[in-house]
Length: 258
Image (cartoon, rainbow, N blue to C red; front, side):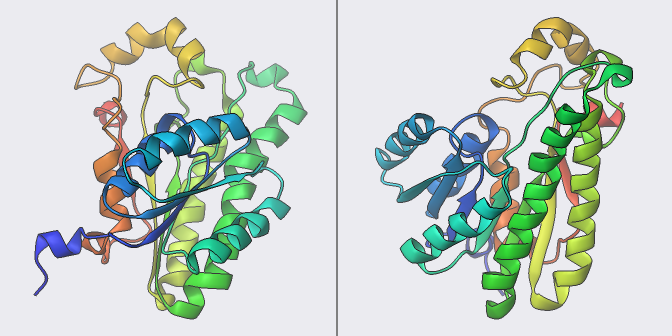
């Protein structure tokens, strides 16, 4: 029988976090690094990656940075190549890179819809597919964690005006379920995290407009904080969640239960 400490031990595992230079991606990368993972983080902007990597290395965390626009499908193979060259394997994949675009649904630009779907759904699928095919299926193990959203559980507040974002995050949840059912035979766990509102660069404008309403509809009465995703991502990355697949954890202060 394994101890709880053994079940949560991910030291030495190799974790890839897309969109890992800031915001929620940074928080999850930091958590995995604190637990002893070797990290690979991606982002579109090199300077942001460099800054994030420097902060991680100051804490003794081994990290590889890969500048990548994940909305371009060819980037998945380039990222995986770089990680395999450096670390030789991938144990944990966190698909966090995402985008949003605000506009009334009746006037929503098709190019905005395509941009959001390309990063939030297609890029997620391509990374899952390539990591599974090249690494996790051959070695018969792996942990995939897709970052969806509370917005994928409902239509979202009408003030959000983010129809593509909500639709893409709902798609991410069913993608998670579909992959979990197919890849369970290979001992690959595929799960999702659905964050609620966290103050980040992407959400700052919206929260400035509807922050009071969000708090009023959140049972815990606060926004997500800088540590609130850490436990969830570590649990789903570790053997503690070995019998959990095709599921999601809502980290939203209870707002999706209202």
